Length: 218
Image 1: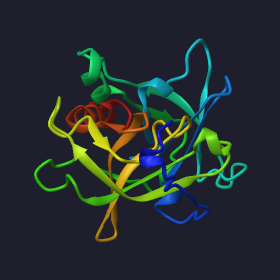
Image 2: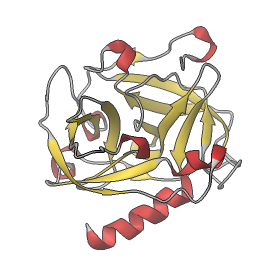
Image 3: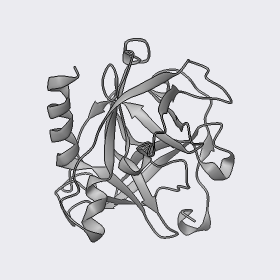
Image 4: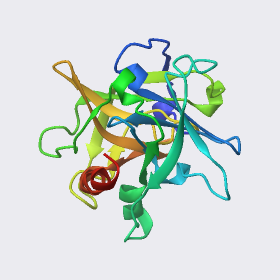
C-alpha cells in the first residue's frame, strides 16, 4: 500500500473547473485504469507503464466522474522514452505522452511543464496530486494537497522525485503539480509507491521528449 504514515490524505474531488478539467482518467480497452493530464492541445502525459499492449486501445476522459462528464478522447499515437538505465533510475523515464485524435485542450486547457528545482522546492509541503485510485473504485477523482518532495537528484537533476504522496493502483500517471500565482504547472507523474514513499517521473527527459514530439504532432 502507498498510504504514507498510515493516514490517507486523499480527498474525493468533484470540481470540474480548470485545472481539473485538464486532468482525468485513462481507460484502456483491456480494463486497466490510469490517470493523466493535458500538457498541450492534444497531448496527455501519463506513466510509461500505462501504455496499452497487445492491441489494446486507450481513451482520455477529462474530469471523469462515474461517466464521461466532459466527454472522451481516443489516443492515436504514443511517445515514450527508452529507459537508458536500469534499477532505481529507470523510474526517471517511466513517463509517456499520448497524442489524442482531437484537441481536448482547446476546450479544457492544459498545464504548463516544469522540472522540480532541488535547491528551492524540496522539503516544502507545496505540491498537489490528482488521480483515480483503484482502491476507491477508479470511478471518481481524488486529490491530495500539501505533498512534500524530499529528493530529486539521485539520477537526473529533477527526476525521479521522492514524495510523501498517498497513492494506489489507478493513480499511475496522475499529475504532480503546483498552482503558481494562478498558473498550473506539472512537475511529473506518479509512477510507483509503497508504504514509505511515492515516486514521480519527469524531469529533463520529459521536457526534452515533449519538445521532440511537438515537431511532428503540434
